[in-house]
Length: 236
Image (cartoon, rainbow, N blue to C red; front, side):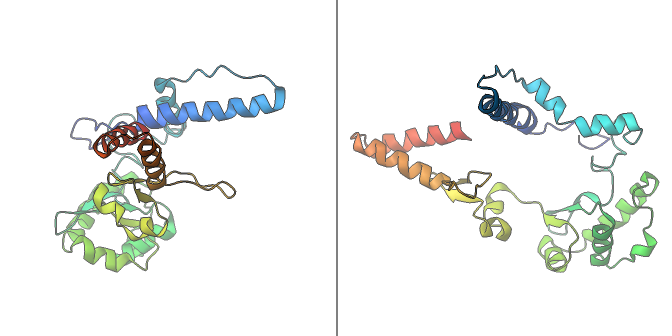
């Protein structure tokens, strides 16, 4: 992960702690519950972050064995080397994320840049990527992020803004789905996935329930705020 001419980029703690750790143990626990429902017997779930992180790379291992993922850094489809699957800097030092992998998205991406898709055939061939990336980088730097978003607003081109966490809270698609909620200590992600029969309680509802319970125990407000903050951090 990361540019070919720099060191590997730490993927935050999303791969180990969350994807390869937390989600793996959740999947194991749910599978054990299904087994118990069918056989009446439980399971000992042995989950390790090193197992989960490797499991997340199953597709990459398969592509490597098929000869369509090269060893080393750069030059691969999903690592930022492809001109249609990477981020570009805009005129105002912000960024656009492009994921125009499929042909129809690729064509719309090029049309949004006022380029002719007919001049960009064989887009999956890495031979073309560096030169096309250089040309498109120069084009994207001519406009601000907001200007590009206006251009791609009605195009199904898989072009989106790169946002800070604070900016993402107010991003219209996230607001539309109520992706975040006010937990009393600031906006936080709401529970997911959502269920048809079981209502999900957002972080604001969780915090409200905790506050009411702690108030009933005559705990002062300052201490309640501190305890809820610690609890919500642990939940994250």
